[in-house]
Image (cartoon, rainbow, N blue to C red):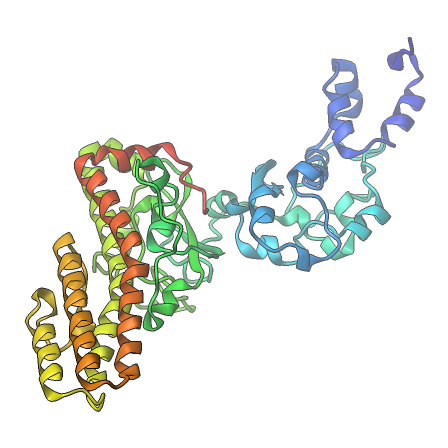
Length: 451
């Protein structure tokens, strides 16, 4: 069997210098003699990480930067932080370190052209230099062989940036929080509803099956259907970085930030939170993740806050469902004018609308379905309206297509929204009956996850 250690030192060095950065570190860890011979420096450990991040399981090089569009690429890619020498997921880096091509992984064509040989040589300096400063050595580290991604060795994770004091809000536009508790913008993510944004996967833990239909969104609330801004926050209690939902922050709409971008010498206005509280620096500095909040205040207090938040999201979804129904009532009421119906039937229809429970008001656009009694009242009124229209057609012998279309739209809005509304109420009943369900979900999940 071939014994590598029996070779002359010159041959050993010649073979070692032709290794790739990953194998170099692996060989140096096989025995004390090779450890002393190779004597890997910080630059060699950094090269190893920069080589590891190009493997398929950590997000291989691509043929074009345009291919690096989110979804599975965002979740499956890992990146080297050459400050703390760790391989970390994408969510622990600010977007400039990911989307700027100079900090990005090399393209496939560059990767194949420049190769992955280590920069180690027996004449390399043993003192090493600190990455992030001006590195002047006689060797060519792997990042210098690929000019298109020549700043990879200066890439730092959010924690290293925080420890180096680089996340001061006044000078760092990505920080929407404070110097003590940074709030960093990550990327936009599509979520169909508020519940999916702030309680992702929680409904799967309940016994009620989610209906196949999506929550209907009226045209005047279409802005809520767009992508949601995702933020990562450093908890002052456990010093871990987690997504904003883990701090019980967030608004009713998707394009929300704790503050607007700050310019040097100025402070942007604060934005109100979901419960109407304006977030000040003092409140942000006291923000704790779910785990730290439960440890400090108890699970019962966490349950109260999360249940209020969950109910708030439920009510927002009810508003979305009620919108098409409310506008349907208003359009139907207005269509009675000039419909060609006898005045008797018009008066009977309007009287029915104005004296039917929650519908007994002129401004139906403010109608919101909150209880099972509301659904019963609406369906009962629809049945009576159908009877009035049938009698009116029989009495006049004429078509009333305009009123019929508005009635069909109103009936369709109720049919489309009722299954989803009943599912929302069932979920709310489950949470009200056992508030600890939402606490278990919040404490068991990965708080840093953005999906």
